[in-house]
Length: 93
Image (cartoon, rainbow, N blue to C red; front, top):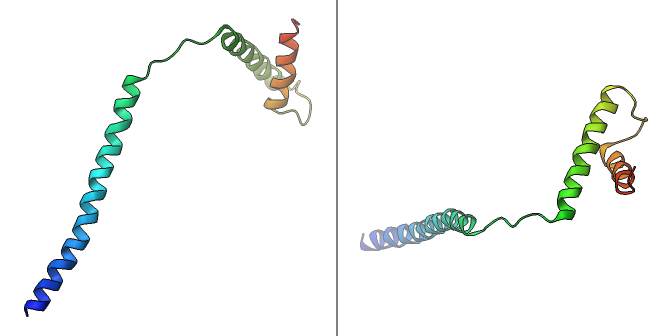
């Protein structure tokens, strides 16, 4: 009888200990990202990044108009269009 009780106590301890450890680790993981995101500050974008965003917005508007008007060549996808449009706008045209 004592063996059964001792065995049950050991099994319970072996099952409960890892679960408590995992629950503590999950709490620590959920708390850590919140602390690190508050500590990070967003650095300002460079002039090159701002110019790229402007070109991307212009090309996006052109792509949307061309696609709605049916002027897009067959097989043309956004990445291909963006590449060509970006080169054209960088060249100043």
